[in-house]
Length: 179
Image 1 (cartoon, rainbow, N blue to C red):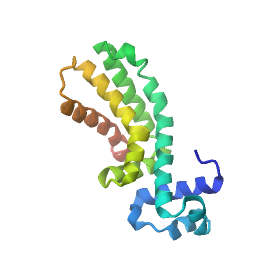
Image 2: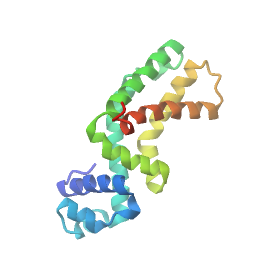
Image 3: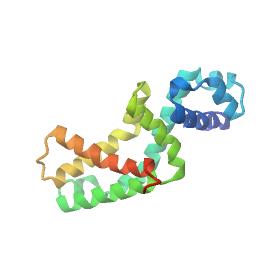
Image 4: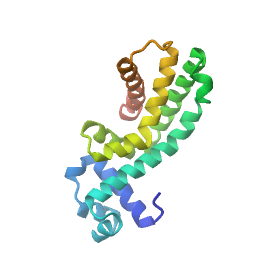
């Protein structure tokens, strides 16, 4: 993705500020100042605040995909676990355990705050996050859960249960003090 140090620094600062305060409460001047750069750097690299926000979502989706790939690999080959309820249960538990480990990392906090804000008040950036990283995890968990349930769950119930399981993992990030 981004290799230029100036772009990376702007993304890091913007993700932190957007996650803490929301996109409407953060100005480009504050981001540039916190990054130790001129405001024109945002225009130069991203075309403005909207481009920066979109680039933040793309960066987070890439980071999430990278961090979730090993978690998904814990589940083993899809073909073998999707047909065997016991194997699917083990794969599901491995995914959830791996996700908890990822969520407990300090460097995930700014990314998670940004994602949660997008979940609560979606902008076009949500589609970037969802398509870039979330969809694959939700789909995989849903397939495994359906296998564990013996194929009996209607689509709506399956989606609700899959998201409920994944939401429990996210609690380890946001209820970290209690955890």
